Length: 113
Length: 111
Image (cartoon, rainbow over all chains, first blue to last red; front, side, top):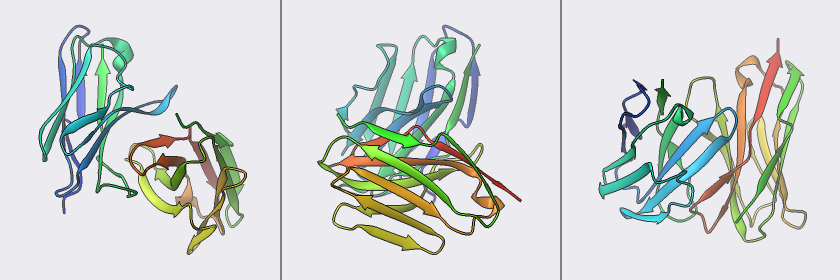
């Protein structure tokens, strides 16, 4: 299996632009998680899905952030408009339901100028 | 919700010595406790996990202990090697879905 796939790996954009991050979970996994990692705040859970349905989005910082999972093999995290404080590494992870390991993707390093 | 605290935030040991990282959690309903290792610029990767019905688990030089009464769990690395240098994260999970991560421990193994 290829593991969790994320794209792009690096994104540099200017303040005010829309940013879309993409994730393909491991085939057969029914949970998908989006995390943000910064030096100051560590690993923060933004949102997670079960069977393509958002379960908990209480970690989404504000209305500028939105996430979708149109099918079992694809999810997006969108930031519109982006701000410099959104600069971070965004990880996607997936797991096979219940008490199971989460497998992380390689991350997207976002820089907002 | 759950609150996970992790100590220390940084740890330096001499090669060959042992390293211990401790985490506490607040919700007694937590039942799954994974540990992740993150090397610089890489993704977090699971190194060991323990479930609430087990008190200790070992995998070669790595072990994890769980004290449910005190609500704390620890990672033990013996015979440390330079390649053990990384940031280690503990996590606690209620009902096995959402992970609550600790703030991480940066371990440096000095050759």
